[in-house]
Image: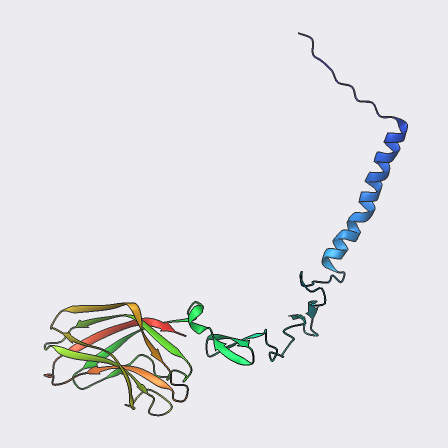
Length: 223
């Protein structure tokens, strides 16, 4: 079978046009690259072209709505005390529970009949919120120990002493050489009161015979 050959012929005019297009593309290529890397390009809102992005003197990208160091307009957002706040009609709306938690919490508390322990030595901010998802308690001692996990107002600059009771989280009897796991499918929420810093402690509850030694692992989140 004979092979068929296709022959394409260009007129001199077509050749000139093709060469001209290639030359034009070669000339325009550096211009387009320069526009992408070095030239000024306006970024505008698709609905209102008057809203244009800007760059501050320190290289930060700004907009006509939320200017650098200016968050007083009704459509700006701020972050404070680990929570996202949006301004709506002049009033703050706290959206902290609608965003992922920023700080996971986990600590092992050492609790006996005569000693207490705290989730952390520094108190939580009055505007913060703690959510506890589970508590695991293991008794390594020689006597049963009744353990209380409680939130209370901070007695001072730290959580090393007792303060005014704020919220009892749970009370768990822990038998000798046993482990008790308490999970909360709906996390236990400990909110700040907006004025007083607070702490979360573990301590013995009620009458206990000396000898109980409980390690309590508290897991949760700080908002």
